[in-house]
Length: 323
Image (cartoon, rainbow, N blue to C red; front, side, top):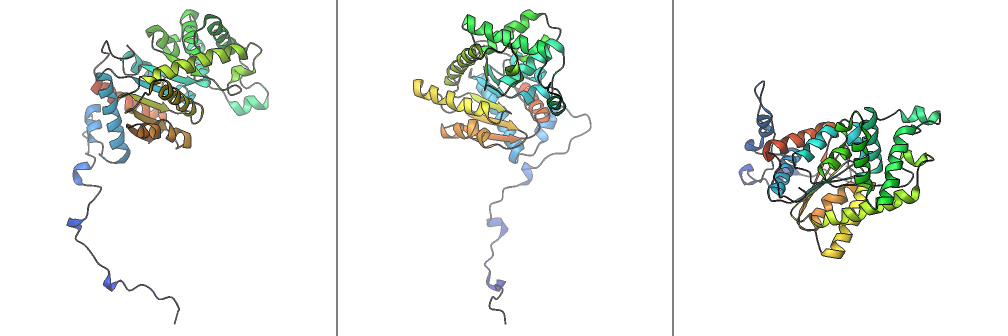
């Protein structure tokens, strides 16, 4: 006989299912839609479970924040531009949903290429093999000149690049997030890590000017973050640079002013990352608010979020923070 005997299950205690709490009930289930249903009907048909429930809560939180005059700040990486979402971001700014933006250097660069030339994103591997990846002269000279202007004028990168695009006469400026924000006086900060962007390889790159201008934008972000109490901050992509920049900006704001607190912090990305979970979702939880992490492709999740917000928001309201 084996030394180890199977457990005798005849004495297992059971309970009634009527006494057991359940996580899923019929009123939480998705509802089938008729052909030709509206977006509002589609939105209401989603199950009230897990990510669908969290996305609905986030949308309601964004709308509530704006109706109460509180800011909605979004930080986003270059992938948002590269998957075609510039028009969606611009629409959310124009409608008064987004009150401030923060981006990394790659986001600003791809925004410039798209605005001036109507196309962006190259084959990195092929270009690297031939030593020409990132060597396009015109966009790099343009963005480097804007940074030098920013340093001379004592303004930030976001403002300088946006204003330069508006003045450029570019044929596709209507698709530029930075240009349209500059036109509407909506703040955009640009946060650069040297060596990460293609324009850093060019003779026209002035590291001193870029350092001064991006540091200006970091200090501006600290002031914007101060106002986040009862507001919303979202991170769309950027797994390293922007989460860590946000962490430092939050620290400065708490150090100088004891704010913010009680804000919603949400990350959208196509995979889960350590830093993107800590900033902003975990920080929002730690400061009395609510954190969310929604995983999915930007080109699907962000338009879904945007339309849901716009259906409930109803348009720009003057006098709100950031207007």
